[in-house]
Length: 408
Image 1 (cartoon, one colour):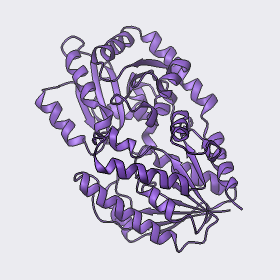
Image 2 (cartoon, rainbow, N blue to C red; image 1 turned 60 degrees about the vertical axis):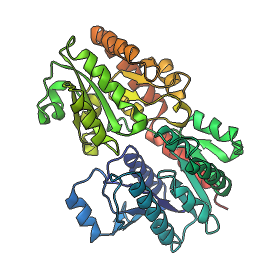
Image 3 (spheres, rainbow, N blue to C red; image 1 turned 30 degrees about the horizontal axis):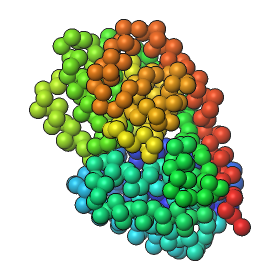
């Protein structure tokens, strides 16, 4: 089976999904598939030397030539404002589509980020069957990022959304909430498969503070109690609330420190917010190499997942599994009726509080700070849950079986 995978990000880039895509392409190749990856030259989360290397090395073979990677130069930045990012996404859409048209394949596998890739999925329908991997729901993701619901782009997005779901042959959603949302919008339930994003527990595992290289790298006191957020720094993550909580705690709990690990379009504004409000117990550090992922998610005594109110059914942060795999308790500031909160409660691996409820978030942090034995038991429960339910082998096999369904 020849599979062509179109993606805007791929290894060695550092994003919440690139390690999943790397696992998936390798596992499909190990099953005897021939996988062609079409992707831009890496820019996100990588050194400029890596970007420059791939400008002159755009063709790559991996996994005994069962994976072929075509990297395409694309100008523009994701960090220079909304319009610049849209222009870049449109460029990605065009160059990936143009390259994909020249490839002989049995099936296209296309993720939903950025949302313009959905247009590629719709346009390639007549060339080969298309499997659409819904990692984010558009245009709900724009509303979550602060775009007014009455904005014409949302109206256009709804039309775009219906077209994509109609054209593609199969849709893979990463949560039950996503699947129900699509069914509620008229998508045939038989066209949808639920496949959770997995976690490789051999790569993400607990590391104690004495052996965590990030404490040494950033000169952090191992006796402090760290609350960490790792992921995209955008508007919808509601990180100002986390910073406000840190400000409230900094004079009364001197050993509680907050660390934000990541990057994103809102990073500069968040840095300014911290500076203007003189918040001294929050440190922002960049994404770390994937090889250090166990150190990243073991750095905190507590891991945080946060968002603005009202986006629970259209968002599921994949960092959740990594926090659980690192055997750390989670404080989730998220819609309480969301699937995420249901899982955290059922797995007994953390505490859920409503979005924007700073005082309840602070109460959860203080409770775990005072009850370290509960931190340990919640962490152990979380790791047991992901080991038993979210293994890489099970989830990538579900991708394989779903892809086979559309091959005629």
